[in-house]
Image (cartoon, rainbow, N blue to C red; front, side):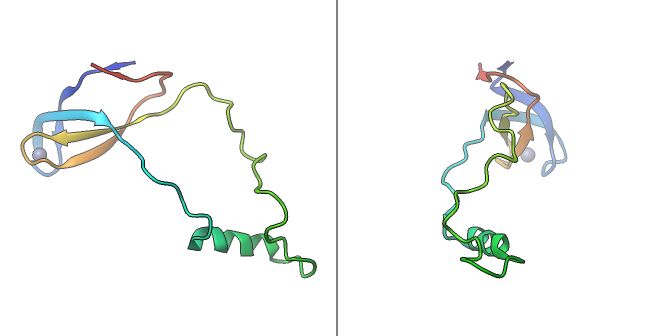
Length: 102
Ligand SMILES: [Zn+2]
């Protein structure tokens, strides 16, 4: 899918249509393995068991209940930045195998 680098669309801050710069939304970093969410999840796995190691760390992470690798396309998020006020917003793109900015 080809997407133009400049798009004229609504800006909520200016409250009107303005020129926007379109770029890819880059996600950086990964979630920590011992951060609050993962620790809470590990505890949750052991709830209601009551014996053994409470299902903490000996078993691998559960992956099979989500069907990974089934879809061949992605819904790539685009970051558009207003040229007048410099405010940016994230827009979801329709499904596409490949997104090319031109
Ligand atoms: Zn604006």
